[in-house]
Structure formats: C-alpha cells, structure tokens
Length: 157
Image (cartoon, rainbow, N blue to C red; front, side):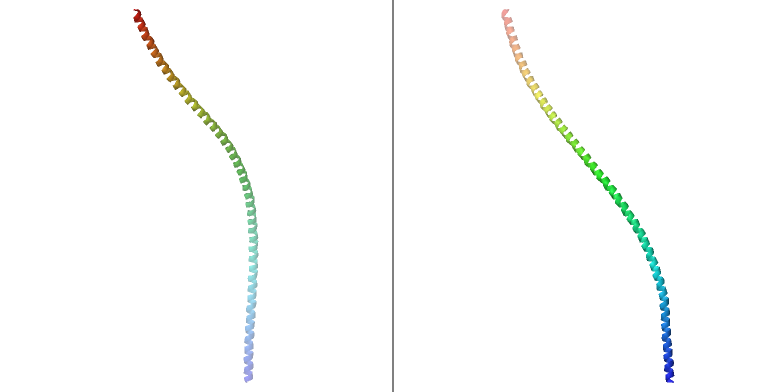
C-alpha cells in the first residue's frame, strides 16, 4: 500500500511537473509568438524611421547645398561691393586732394590780396599824409605870399 501510495504520489507529482512543463511550454510559445510580433513591429517601425531619416537627410543635404550656393553668391556680391567701395573711396580721396589743393591756392591768393590791400591802404594813407603836409606847406606859402603881396601893395600905395 505504501508503495502504491508512493507510486500514486510520484505519478501525481510527475503529472503535476508535466502539467507545469506543458504550461511553461505553452506560455513560452505564446510569448514567443508575441515577441516575434513585437520584433516584426519594431523592425517595421525602424525601417519606417530609417526611411524618414533618409528623406529628412536628403532634405537637409539639399538645404545645405542651397545655403552653400546662396552664401557663395552673397560673398561674391560682398566682394564686388567692397571693390566698388574701395574704388569710390579712392575717387573721393583724389577729389578731396584736388579740393584741398584748390583751397590752399585760394587761401594763398586771399592772403596775397589782403597784403596788397593793406599795402595799398598804407600807401594811400602815406600819400594822404604827404598831400596834407604839402597842402599845409602850400597854405603857409600862400599865406606868406599873400602877406608879402599885401605888404608890397601897401608899399606902392
């Protein structure tokens, strides 16, 4: 009986173990199916992301090329404008030198004119002073002559 009970117990234990193993196998199969499904979904999502990434990368590369062309075009324009500004600056400097030399000439002419005017005014003042002295001398001479004539007239009378 004991052996029978041990045999039944061991058979029950083996049945339990086999049921657990079957259950584990069934769960593993179900999980395997689920994980395969998840892996396929993940692979599909990654493929889609990679496709989008390539598309975005193509757009980014296109925009970088476009930006590079635009930068080159703008740099060329800036270089042209710089050259034009240098040319205008040189022209302006040469005009400024010409204007400065003309201004210096005009200053010299004005200075000479002032000196001549001062000299003329001084000469006129000197001549006026001489004339005044001559007039005074002539007045004195006339007075002396008139006095002599009066004296002579009175003498003859």
